[in-house]
Image (cartoon, rainbow, N blue to C red; front, side, top):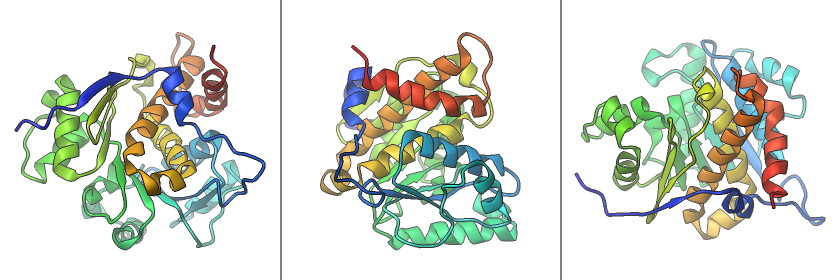
Length: 286
């Protein structure tokens, strides 16, 4: 299968800076955007903390966490500003650290029920890991953030066959195919991250290999979710903005990794304090 040829482009700090919404004196927590988060599980509780903390570090008006199994207490210990009461949401971040629907404990079943409700919700959606199966089924503009193995499995579930190795070897090709097949914007994570959206395929600069460690994808999901919700009003007018926002999230993530690593191993938690410095560097780059 050959997708329509998208315009290929690279991504720079200047491009990223243009996508970061700067609050004004007229803004308040609701105008800056409310991000609903359905992440983490009993198997992977840290994903809830990492995704929420990363979103908050990137900047949101409010983060509303949907919890089961005591995860709210864990998240609130790290992020006391998180809201756990139900209410309005402008964009959803779902699936990081959530098991696939088939292997569900009661907690996972409840969380997948929450995800399923999003099918009729008009809020924007960022889908990671355990929520990728929802790709192409939601009413709202959708961004997915798979790695090569997850994208190969997702395409296979739609009778488009590629191996993990094939997707990793030609990320731009397979991200574009996934965009065309599923009707969603695709952020394909890997040694060379690419983003495919309407008419465009963005190749991100190569990130440090030290990012290949558990939990860094949860941090990326949080960063991207925050960027998406911060532009919820603009995205209502132009869903095509999802692609540059996704690329900006990957760019911030890579810059934070450079700062946290400084040429040595990093942990996912060490990325969190580096996000603010990465944003400063991008916003004030010459």
